[in-house]
Amino acid sequence: MSVQTHNITLIPGDGIGREVTTATRKIIEASGVKINWDICEAGAEVFKKGLATGVPQETIDSILKNKIVLKGPLETPVGFGEKSANVTLRKMFETYGNIRPIKEMPGVATPYHGRGIDFVIVRENIEDLYAGIEHMQTPGVAQCLKLISRKGCEKIVRLAFEFARSEGRKTVHCATKANIMKLSEGLLKRTFEEVSKEYPDIQAHHIIVDNAAHQLVKKPEQFDVIVTTNMNGDILSDLGSALIGGLGFAPGANIGDDFAIFEAVHGSAPKYAGQNNINPTAVLLSGVMMLRYLGEFNAAEMIENALAITLDQDRVLTRDVVGDRGAASTTTFTDAIIKNLGKKYPRSKVRDFKPLKLPKVDHRPDMVRPSQCQVDGVDIFIETNQPVDVVGKNLESLANATLFQFKILSCRGVKVYPNPSLKDPDVVDHLCARFTAKDATDAAILDLLQKIGVNYKWVHIEKLNAYDGKPAYSKTHGED
Ligand code: NAD
Image 1 (cartoon, helix red, strand yellow):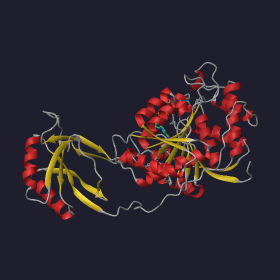
Image 2 (cartoon, rainbow, N blue to C red):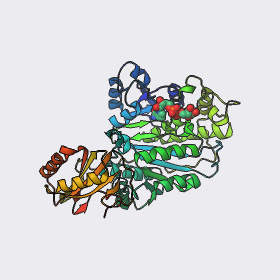
Image 3 (cartoon, helix red, strand yellow):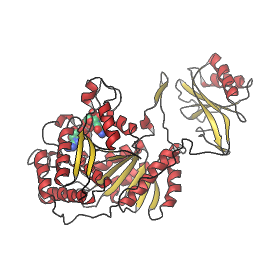
Image 4 (cartoon, protein in one colour):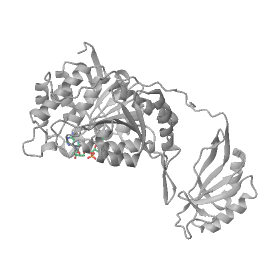
């Protein structure tokens, strides 16, 4: 055990949060690790006081000072408070990597028990659809922007490989939907293929995310580390927690360059708050991840052994595992783990844990610099309820008086004019007109927009960029 005292910000949180963090704190302290806990507020009570972020300045100051947080779940209240305080904390402290281990628990019966499930999902935590950038483009059509950056991909891929090395794991799968979203999800796949060459000691495979879901149910023991985008990772990790006995057993860590926030996957389960009957294991195992992050490897292993003995040999099990009859209370379960500290669980699989080496990624905003950029044209989205033939013909003739050529009209990604694949396409009030030009200038685009604006309400535009001579935009379904 190290003689060092660690300074940690502890956010008990809402609902069952106080019970699960108290149990975790007691067990960590009993393991002999010295921690100076700075107990801070965030979540429901803070929203009620009228602070829209749910995270007070004193809590932010404590995290800035300590850099490491153990956190209970925070409720996202309906009716007051705009955004989730959980997401605010992850974004504010740039914890770009969400590490979620899924490991079979000794003594916890599930349909998968005995198959040796032990994998980790490394989920990108900041970008993708979860940036929550949404707009109604027309009264009938909503847009959510899926922004994926090369920098974000490189950080999460390197973190996945570094995490694999820190735990002596041998394989990393990258799960994407790059077959459909070739540019956005494809950027993660391409970055993974490049970066994986720097980790020859680890096998690297790409897997399409829907097949990953299928394989996780069919043969979960084949996975070691799965790196994936934010939304895919959220779904796959909840699926994973169900394989090993539910949310009571699913820990997590949010890792950034400078800060780390350790928290369970589960929420505040308000129905069970204050009843002394919930399972504190998920937060306890998040605490174990925190101990390894702090270099306290012996204490981490000691707690894992005590937990395994409590579950498998002593059969002290909480309500979520055995139902109401014969269930141990949260405090009884906690005391049983403390009593077992120092004992060795005979079937424990000892990994070769090493300190996690945080990846260093180029910090320049423009870390990708093509040597040649040009604009091949523009997509202009308009709100209209006119028949597509009328819109198509109008835009075709309108383009004659500009530097652009009208190419096609599409609706939700499918060509509807000219010669649509479907005879009578089902359209909505939102059409996209594609115009091409040789190296389109901003002035030419503004001229085109002005001309379109006389007869149509344009709602959105996208430049058709080409980098180093390659189109950096997708074709429409049905486009030549
Ligand atoms: P939840 O995870 O709180 O609870 C769902 C169910 O899972 C519970 O009813 C319970 O049956 C079970 N469960 C969860 N944790 C358990 C534990 N430790 N022991 C035993 N059983 C457990 O999900 P929810 O009900 O959808 O969300 C409740 C609140 O939590 C919401 O306000 C939500 O926004 C918030 N939330 C917070 C986080 C976080 O803080 N990271 C994550 C998810 C949800």
